Length: 141
Image 1 (cartoon, one colour):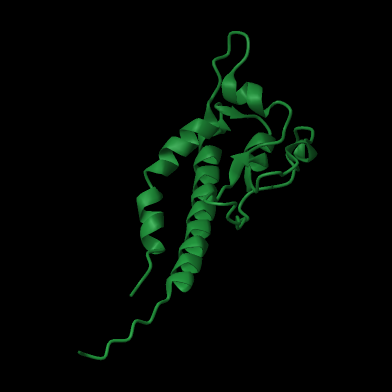
Image 2 (image 1 turned 180 degrees about the horizontal axis):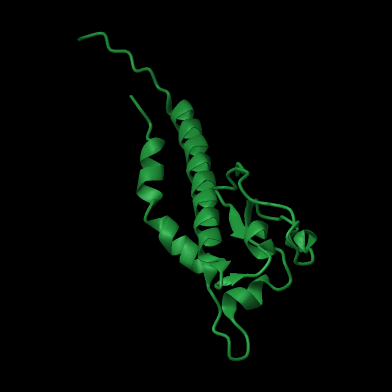
């Protein structure tokens, strides 16, 4: 019989996987944010730039209504800040959006305007970058 010792690090592995999962979701949220902002430009949803600057990531439960401001060239930039989600059971979540009252009609459309769909288009473009984001956080031996 040989001496064999198992160095069980399951709890450490679970913790690392949760932390890496949160980092992946956080970075992916910022990627969706950036791609969504690129969808809005002069002649395509931008007059003052307030809507574009209002798009940001947030944790579940965030009060989006508190972001509403009047359109102006001096409206605050709300994006670019990484939010680090915590696991809620098996779920790790961030949200991407805008709290401006007119954000949804510009996204979805209204009356005869079909909308710019800047968030869903940004999400689709960001999905192409997801594998490279995941690869950055692989657990190493």
